[in-house]
Length: 99
Image (cartoon, rainbow, N blue to C red; front, side, top):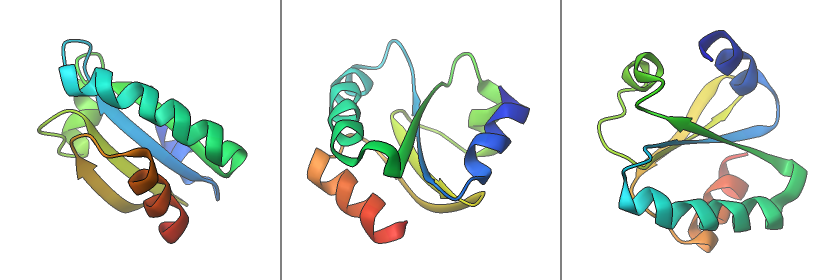
């Protein structure tokens, strides 16, 4: 996943990465919200889910201490990060204002 991950976040399209875990309750709450965000924004954003238990090296690289943690990338640069669950409107506002 790691080399592929760098390719994914390098693009000109905004990429929202959701660091999550299968055992995490708030992560389960966030999943359908992210689906709605994707449905509303369509091709303007790519949403990638990273399971921290399966990708510990990547989670460590980005210092993900709690899940869910969302990080917004564009052109390989980290533009924003937030831990916890946000509402759809808040996530869309961040993506639109940063990308």
